[in-house]
Image (tube, rainbow, N blue to C red; front, side, top):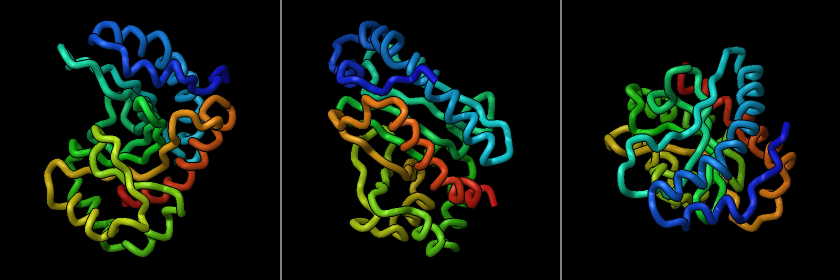
Length: 205
């Protein structure tokens, strides 16, 4: 694997003004790293799940004016797309890297998944280790430890509010030495995904 970690220059990409300029830097600096890291993680998830998983790299194709504030890779069971499915993500904002199991608002069975989690809330809580965080909006940086929010309230909101989302995983602040160690970051991402696989399976059960 030729992934050598994320440097400060990668995070500084999101300070570049202009859509074309920032997209050019994303293509040059970040996407090659996503392809290397993503291929490895996709193979790992295919093996642990016993099904073929597919790598998607955010295109930001709908943007015409505002440059993206973050970018990501996604791994899902559907070759054609990921947004309508539970999926795994690795990505960057200007101040952090994120590693998520993501359930976003495009999910057609969002309420059903939320109800399955509510019905087994003790198992859900037991699956999420200390140090993991939850986000309710993939477009915002905000993420909170499970200990500081009520999981039942989060799941009820996810079930009933159309735009509510559920992302579970880890955030690593820019400047953390681990980010510049490609092998260490890969191991962290793999460990995070392995830990969250039971929730991925529960979403489909």
